[in-house]
Length: 524
Image (cartoon, rainbow, N blue to C red; front, side, top):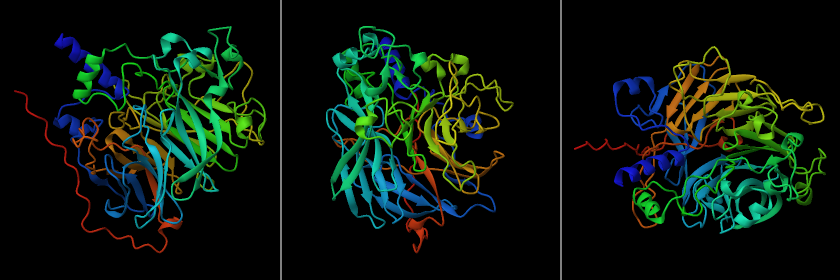
């Protein structure tokens, strides 16, 4: 019985880490190769620098802490913002404040999937300027958000949906837990006062579903004929049933996530994890790693038009204008056409940067049948960064041929480690283009940030050495394993950013105390 329970624990832990891979032992080969995906036994801090770097800084939020740090090119912390909850993801504003995703310690219902519940604005000198909570039993903001030119915020949110409502929309019963799925929506928040926020626009994925399972339902149809809609019977299958006793044991071993029950395991079926906004096109791009696809929708619609199939600047209401990565999802391809595997952090390259208008993203897992010369057949697990050029015309319309899938067939540019072994993060992570044409990469599981040239040469590298001491609600410490230094998002901030003008950016004294992972316990 105990052996079966331990096997079950191992399987569920692997699922929770989204195929993170096994914990590697401490040995010299791993240290040299950098194959320890979580960075347990490799040097931390600044590990590489070169001459001629663009002046600038790197901003990131330390895991399990309220701190967001700004480090210089020497790896020294020159500024910190302190919130009052766990810092998840931050964006720098022109006035020196940050908008921060903050993990509310008391949100109900939701668990796995990056929910945090609060968006806060913290001034350069640490004052709480805005603290907006969006977390209740029906919905919660999670993962990423984007800032509009008018100061409003686009945020991803889970929507708790009942089993019965999902069935009424044609979802197969065997693909849902008893509590029903968490569907997704995108909300636009207009900040009001120190704590208020008005929802001025909404888009629901539930309004843009199709299924070919139950012809009695109003959204019945052929997904191949409607690439602008999402097949509702896609997504990860639910895990095997589990008893309350087994769940209690997993909780005691810290192998479950917050608010998990025997009835809601597998509720997170699509798992949107990134969002970005293009002001020139007035379009939104977002990512679903569980579907291995990215999607673009029109933001120029009203909320009413966003729920429909017509309206807005592009005439399609809230339907997808574009999607890419896994055409089998709309039955216009098969596994050999799939190009994304659990990707994160999609965003447009901004005007003025090389590749402007293209999209960059972090492809976490091996990319199917790409026949790249750099690919090493001996390596099964590795990550890549893609830049893709979308098939868009002069009117902002995305071109797709009848019965074909959206292009491109291959990325415009990509990065992978020459050995494949040294660059892999099975979850989180990201990348974005810099003004000098280099690409800044966050290898999230390891907390590794590095800059590569268009020729794929690493010219700067830093590994996050920090972790905070936020505790559980009952006062117990949180287990740092398996990913003590993980980083959801790190951002390169150029030295001429408006927020930094007139600021004295010298190393703070004392520097934050690095976190040192305790040695593994010796087996008796």
